[in-house]
Amino acid sequence: MRRRLLAGCTLVAIVATTGSLYFSEVAGLAPCELCWYQRILMYPLVVVLGVAAYERRAAVWKTGLPLSVLGVGVAGYHTVLQLTPTVQCSAGIGCGAILWQGLGVFTIPRLALLAFGLVSVGLVGLAVVDRRAA
Image (cartoon, rainbow, N blue to C red; front, top):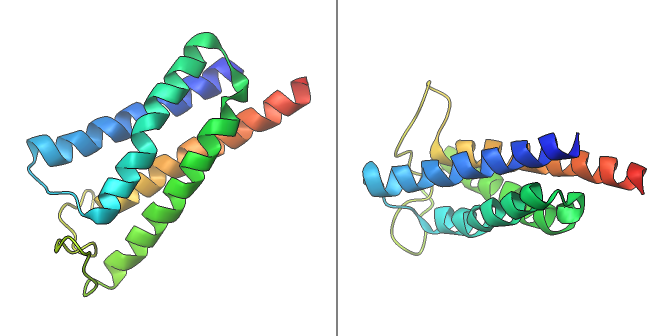
């Protein structure tokens, strides 16, 4: 169970990181200030969770959960800003602007919110399993 949770969380972090790099480097969409904060919180999760999955360290939830919960907060705030698109980031790129929309529902901040939420839920599950085993 631990290994599957670790692998799942790692996979979500890898997909989110790859997606953010795709949007900026391939699709040419410039990240706003809040996107940068989300990247700062997601990119280390790939390494932290990947190493923990390889080494089968369930206690990684103590390191990963604060990053993912902060990411939920930033991505949630960014999603709310999209509902009020007149707000501008200090970089001049509107954080409320919708630069990409998939399936009519998903925007980049909503994808980040989903990814951080999935990682957070997985790490909470890992914490429960880890504490029961102790």
